[in-house]
Length: 350
Ligand SMILES: [Zn+2]
Ligand SMILES: [Zn+2]
Ligand SMILES: [Zn+2]
Image (cartoon, rainbow, N blue to C red):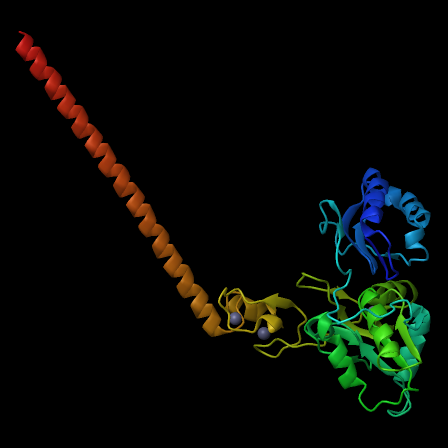
């Protein structure tokens, strides 16, 4: 897996899309790539033996000048996230909901995983008033299963909520304060830090280069997970289990309260949980006991619906076979009538 992004104005996103397709299709590159006037955001899988050629194609495009390639092993051999190469022109590569765009290129400093590691280690030894502010720019369901030691979670539902949450988090904080931000791969911090600098007036702002994905790789290579400053798991979009980075389990099952970081959606299609909070933490035992539902009411409702559906299905089956039976009786009646008629004619002819 290779992911990269660049928030840098593009004159002709469609043209770039065409040229990238022409360069990558022959290499067997698969994945999802968004191009927009504001830049590019790409997540692709590249065959191992094509990686060097792929890197050359990236360097060959001036629009991708200086991008940082986040190379990451897939979570498992079976996990093949892409089946084709999609390069789509879009309005935004990262929808932000802001009324007007900022200059995304002015977004502060980037720290390497090693620099970040010692910063976070140091930060957690300092007095409350003296230490930098460490902010997790991701959504609530991401930070509830894993975050950096000492980080404040924005607790957002979507990235669009980031702006209000940042204002709230930084309310009353001196503009001289050092601000540190991180997200999964780095792109959200590009926009968040541009906002913190240009709209909120902070000067000393840095992000973790390549995000948690990059940090996780650093920890794996240089330390063991017990020294990870990231606690718990890195949430992976659309998967129940994230990538374990730290050894801790931060979250608890909503039913029995035991330690768990398995995320799930309720199996009751009419679950009353609000859409924004549809993902929750549930341990294996509770999931089995409640038939994949968030509570016993949902489990009852699911069962009742399944029974209703089953009854409906049987009823339809019965109707179909009844109609078939009637048709075949009518047919045999018709055949009998025809035979009788033939017999009559035969008798009459005698
Ligand atoms: Zn980030
Ligand atoms: Zn449980
Ligand atoms: Zn439910």
